[in-house]
Each structure stands twice: as structure tokens, then as C-alpha cells.
Image (cartoon, rainbow, N blue to C red; front, top):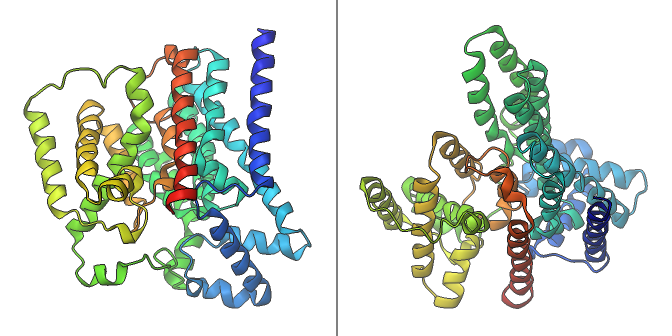
Length: 416
């Protein structure tokens, strides 16, 4: 046991050192995280020059990310911290994501090998997005951290004790997460349904609603009363022409096909380990319904490469084949696994939340990394057991994420 623990410590230090190495050499596997960070820094300096004006006119800066991290960075600059020091502070705060991911795993897989759970939580270090937005601080990484903390208390409520204090703490950290990254606010729907199912219409559910309103009121006041609605700020290339001929069904089809393909991408190591990719396809009426749903979405799909983003399969299809055919094939496979093999109300609700949490026209793969990894091992119901966390299985997941890092490096340096 001592040897195994020492190997874990050594491996953790190696992964941490790789992140520090990335910081020193300006690593950016997302390709745009460095530019995004310096946009935040530029806006932070504007806040310093005229704090009141830019608070009340933040939407003029054409930044659809929350102003909270901009304000924090402005205050850190004001007290005399250099930009690299600020980066290092946020980088080390981001490391808490691995810690709370492990705590979530330990609640659910309480009888699994703890070392296996620790190794799984460390995979976050191989996430291209985690590395990029830890080195180049972004509101999304802090939002994801607080979202994972909120998940931890939710899981304690679900699997440990039905203590109302867990409900309130879960709600509190979800609110903090949402103030950093508003996309996470939609998960309140998921938590609310769970709590409503347990408490019904007892007094606790009304306390929960009142507390939620209290937490959300500052955001509501800022967005709708002061009318600083920054959520859709920042133009997507080609979006103006698209919006002239805007069809709601096309917008929805774009989301459904692309986001489903991204979800499938991150499911691949789980599908391989469960050996489900080799099983025969069962032809029945449900498969026919899925096929018809797929055809309808194909008919209205009109996401364009100039919008940027689109997910790994969409970009691969357009860059190497100059069409959407390969993407459509993958999208159908995605539909088979997501809407047939793993379909249940719980998973459908999470997928619905993932769809509506990305309101803008552009859809980026990085928005779902490492979020989906955390969701698959926490609230997605895909029948994982404690035996999943053995050396062979974890090696497959590590190989998957290591390959993703190589692909991200190639994309940033040779395609973008």
C-alpha cells in the first residue's frame, strides 16, 4: 500500500509539474484562451479607470462572459499584483477541481478502490480545456470548480443523508458558480426536480425557493432591471447574415446534433470499457423513432464552419472532407448511444440542460471539457460499478485524454 501511495504522489507531482511547465512556456491547447485572458485583463484595466461606468455598461465591452472575474482581476491589479502572479493564483485555485471531483467520486463509489478514484480525478490534468483556462484564467474554470463543489453536497444529499443543510449549501455554491459562469445556473432545474421529488410540497421546498430567489436577485437586477444584458454580447463570425434568415428549428437542430456528437465523443472510453460498441444493434421501433428524429434534425441542420467551433467531429468532417457526411454518420451513432442505449429521464434532463445552457449561436467543444467527465461519473446514470476503477480501465481513459491533448496540440499549431 505504501508503494502504491508513493507512486500516486509521484504521478500527481509529475502532472502538477507538467502544468507549471505549461504555464512557463505559455501553453494554450484551446488556441484562444490566451487571447481571452488578455481581453479580460484589458477590460479589468478599463474597470480601474472608470469602475462605475463599466459596471453599468459592461455589455458595451462585447464580452459574453460574466464580469465577476474581470472585477476580481481589476482589484488584484489595483493592489499591485503582476499579471503572471495573478495567473499563478488562479492556476492553484483551479487545482481544487481535482480534489472536489475526487470527493464526489468517493460519495458515489464508496466501496471502490480509493487509489483508483484518485487516479481518475487526476485525469482532469490531461483535459486540454482545464490546462488552458487554468494557465490563462477564465471565468468558466472557477464556475466549474464551484459547480463541482455544489455537486458534492448534492451527492451527499442523494447518497448519504437527506439533510436540508446539504440542499442549502448545494444551492449556495451553485449560485456562486453561476455568477462566474451563467451557463451553470440551468442545473438548478435538475437539483430542484430532485428536491421536489423528495420533499413534495413540504415547508423545506418553499424555503429552498425563497433562498434561490434571494441568491438570484442580484443577477436578475443587473441583467434585467439595470439592463446590462451581456449574455449574447460578442459577435459570431457570419452570424449577422444567419440571423436575417433565422429559423428556430435550425438553431435547435444545430444544438442537438453538435452537442450530441460532443457528448458521444466523451462517452467513447466508457463505451469501449463496457464493450458496448461491439454489441449488435437491436432493430426495433425505438431505433426507428431515433432514426426519424435524426433525419428531421439533419433536414434543418445549417451550422457553418465560419461560425467557428462545432465540435471535433464537425470540424474534422469539414476540414478533411469539405462536407458534413462524416459528421452525420457520427451524429447518428451518437443518437443511438445517447437516446437509445443510455436513455432515461435523468440523462435526458441533463442533456436538455446541456442544450439550453449554450444559448449563443456558436458551439465550442471546450465548453464541455472536463464538465462531461465530471457529469458522467457523478449524476449521469450509465451503470458504472466499483470494478470500473481498475488499472486497465483507467489506462484506457488516460490514453483517450492523452490522445485528445495531442489532437488539440495539432489543431492549435497546424490547423488554426
